[in-house]
Length: 154
Image 1 (cartoon, rainbow, N blue to C red):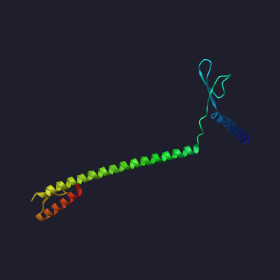
Image 2 (cartoon, rainbow, N blue to C red):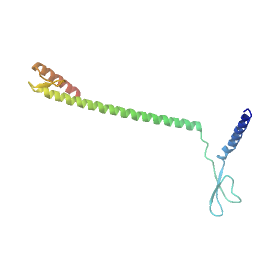
Image 3 (spheres, rainbow, N blue to C red):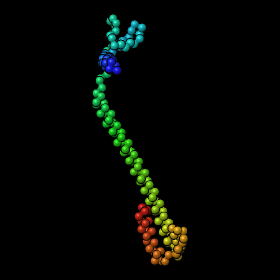
Image 4 (tube, rainbow, N blue to C red):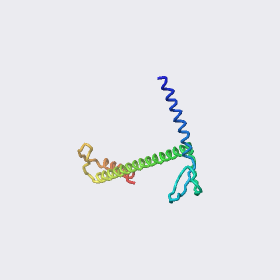
């Protein structure tokens, strides 16, 4: 087992050295020219003979830290926009639910007002029974329903 460790270390060192030589190749100059047969040739070595070649510069190196910061800023902005849209949709849904509740309360208050406007009428109770209100009770309920209508039927 102790001998495997140096072998693994040698492999790691070899891979590191190879990778160091491969990195600059990606940033080497490129040459573009047209050969005698009219084919466009791209190469890392200059063309043979007196053939004119266009030198293609490598792309600029990327500042990975700045790119990472920019990506994180874009992700944060996207998250903020998403949260804003979700909050806006939630508020819209709540406003729609509040409006529906207000309209239902208005409808019920108007229906109750119509019931109390009939003198000597029978009024349905929550348990399903019907009772006749005194004139004083009826007037009190009329005033109460008119107040609810002012509150709910805007």
